[in-house]
Image 1 (spheres, one colour):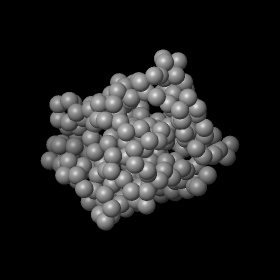
Image 2 (cartoon, one colour; image 1 turned 90 degrees about the vertical axis):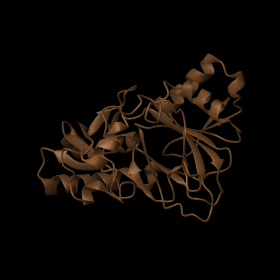
Image 3 (tube, helix red, strand yellow; image 1 turned 60 degrees about the horizontal axis):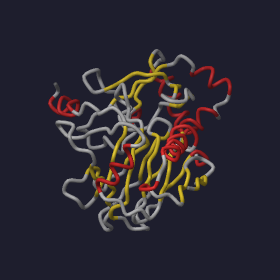
Image 4 (cartoon, rainbow, N blue to C red; image 1 turned 180 degrees about the vertical axis):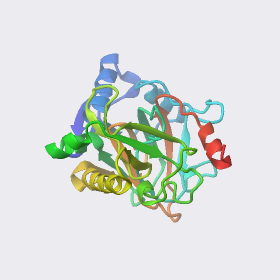
Length: 280
């Protein structure tokens, strides 16, 4: 097995890997590469079935189950499948379930039906961005807390920048955590601000908080912190959902784009979606 960096910002290409002939020390090496150093792993040309994809992900932690009864182990991000999510719309920068106490630890996507000219998936390194903050700004951020909130019924729920829209009241799903929060495994500081869900810095006047968030967006999502993944058939990627944020441009409908998704971490309470839609 060979591990080669993908870009200066993040990621590693895994070559000469056979999941059927992988020792426990190999799996531990991959876990360290995912959660401690590279934060995204790319494996190419693996024609994995649904079950093989799930089995691969199970080596990185407990699966985040899906569905009303938490019985589904995978789903599809697709602009053609009737059971697919997101469809063709743009998705602004975020990490999944930032508005909950326990965001997913990792997410994996497999290129089930993609075209090389289709929309890429973009990743930004929130650990690298935090480490490159000027000393005075880093000192200012210590102790500050950030609110992430979501309105799942809004038309712009995926593509919008939350802080540029009306702040959501306390009845919407939300969570407050440190603006500089420690990685669950390494303790490295990460920026928890993200375009899609961050709507307030707790304790700061609104104008000052908005200005700070906009400044941090500029620092976090600058080119040197970003890797753009251009999909090829049978690409398998898995990334650290705490250390990296992800986004995508509008996909459109002219080219099929279907990615099979498996998540790792605490199963989210999806009933929050039903409550937000009904006002409960």
